[in-house]
Image (cartoon, rainbow, N blue to C red; front, side):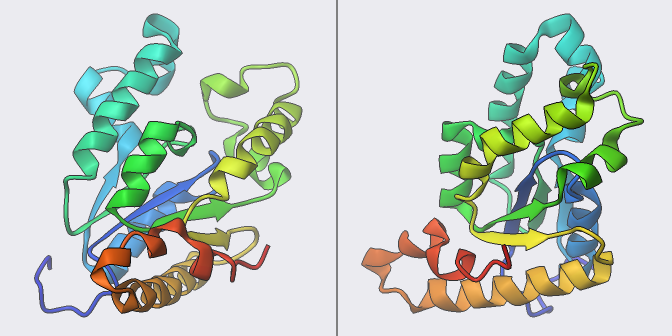
Length: 203
């Protein structure tokens, strides 16, 4: 399946965004559509550390988990022919964000706080262990929004079938790829800033 014969807009792309926006599900389906490998960074961390994310937070602390994230980002940005699903907080950290955006396009998925709550309320996510998880979600999303806006492409996932989302992402990746190839070599960094494509987001 993983051959060079299929026509693709990119051979590497990362999906970022808040927890519960659909990064893992859409990332998997996007990888199938583009015939690329799929890597979920949270699952990679659990496999390497040998503990679940809640166990890592509880036993090792958030600082240790973020250090693991940085290591994993270094690994996945060296890959090719891959769709990368990032943990909700990975893109928030400046060094991770810089490395990811330098590597290729980062698609940010968006959803309303209510949708995120419905999708995550039965999970064991450490950041939502609070008396009012919905309010916690709203607060965190407000805090992180300016950083997520630095992504390359922005897509809303509320109430939309995954096939439609994947189709839109691929269409936007083609647009990004066309613009990226159009810049002279000395200006190659410009498209990674996400201005031309990101401004088309239906926000």
